[in-house]
Length: 262
Image (cartoon, rainbow, N blue to C red; front, top):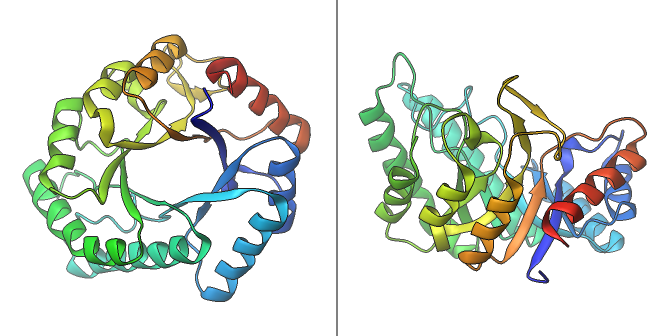
């Protein structure tokens, strides 16, 4: 399906320098990369140039350190502000590198943070970020993660819809969901709110992430559901290559072709 492009999370690529990583991803045949939040415009310009020189898109930015350490739903207002600041820096990174999305974790339910508190704080804090994202033509893409929050596809869809903004969208992860749901169900429920997809595999009996073709993911059902909702965009691998870096990345790229046909 020509409307799908295949990406790689840059942080999962071996290499001492960004230059090495971009070169490996390009040589392995990927279309683009997803990068971490970068600290300043000099670094953002470097990554933009590396992408252009290697023929790759930078299609997205992942907000690092936003899961446990800087939860946007923390009891501590300073921690919540730290999370907001990270997202703003990620929006700036996306704007400078022409990325379309910033992936963020919607918060964490913990022994100290109730479900109700997490929901209220998450919506309140993320709403503050919408004007900045809109100004920079960047989407805020909420991913399903192991955070004890937004645990059903119906709830996740209602959460996204609660923002009443085309700027807040879904980032669906095919591996994270398997411990408490079925990917194809979630895809159909989230429907057009899905603007990005992470591809990784989970082996349920052993409760661990594995190679793309080694998990209990029903890839056929996932592909069918993505086609049904007319998904168009990047499907990005979040799997570390094994063995020789280039050969490992080529194997991942081949597995993605086997699964998605692109």
